Amino acid sequence: MVTELFAELEQKLESLLGQMEGLKRANAELKTALAAREQALKEAQATLEKLTRERDQVRDRVDKILNRLKILDLGESA
Image (tube, rainbow, N blue to C red):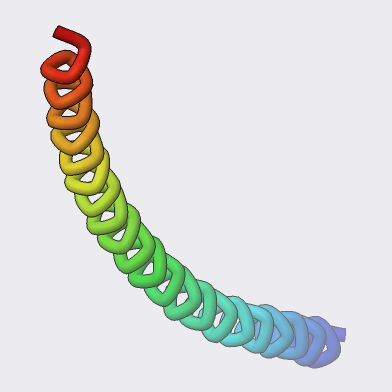
């Protein structure tokens, strides 16, 4: 009777240890996936910042050109 209880306890313990190892592997995989996503997010943010700066530069240049055209237009109207 006692031997059977110990055998059952050992079996349950082995099962729990196996589950624990599986969870550790899954956790490690999730950490790796998370790190990759965080890196991709950083790269996307850097690209977005670059594109925003470029857009602002283009907008400034277009505004300057439009202002010069307005000045020319005002000169012709006078």
